[in-house]
Length: 278
Image 1 (cartoon, rainbow, N blue to C red):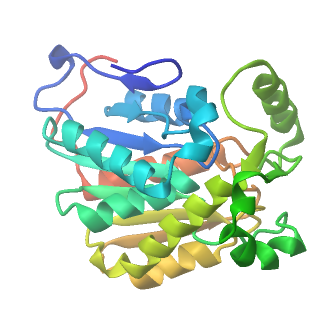
Image 2 (tube, one colour; image 1 turned 90 degrees about the vertical axis):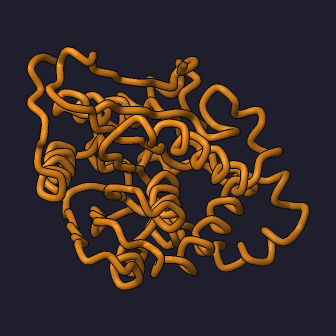
Image 3 (cartoon, one colour; image 1 turned 180 degrees about the vertical axis):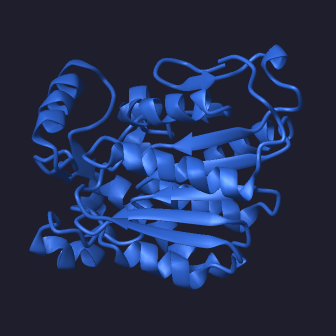
């Protein structure tokens, strides 16, 4: 069962004519399931059971961030997938930022995955808000300094829409739903995961959708391009949006992003069931 800000959105057996399908969601770096909730509710209303859990060291466990590694994140994600997958005919994974990289990681290591929807995939930290000092990162990350330094969250919160940005600032200030900075040890974990993902992209054979903003402030479209060129999937689709920053599930094109995911999933997985009541 979920705890705190983790969530599971489940339909009853009576709402379906056949066995249910599901989507496992992964949040972003230093974020929490909070940032995936509206997306999850959208997918739930469209007939899927939805699951989302905080990565180790995230959400309500941010005091653990310095003691976990990228391998802990991978083990956590694989464990959740293995437990849930056996209960469904079709099972998809989707994520934002770190979560997108993790979704692709699972596709590289699980042949029974039905599809991946990767949003703002972060394999490189090369967005327009990244400071020039990023060139020093490879050196710093190999030293003990990474346990003692953080760099602050971009003041935009990864959102172009100013009204939404202000709302997120108020919510994050009141609730323990994410960090307002990026601990370097956490960044180190992301980059190690990303390197592993890049090395194994050819193992991805399931359908994959990548949606990325041309103006992503954290990670440029290079990440999505590397994914699209590296996977072995026969079905792969890339959508580049123009009026959002990194947090595309909350920005100006959020409805378009969610509907694009819905369309993609339905195209590769025509409904075998009729949702009778939500």
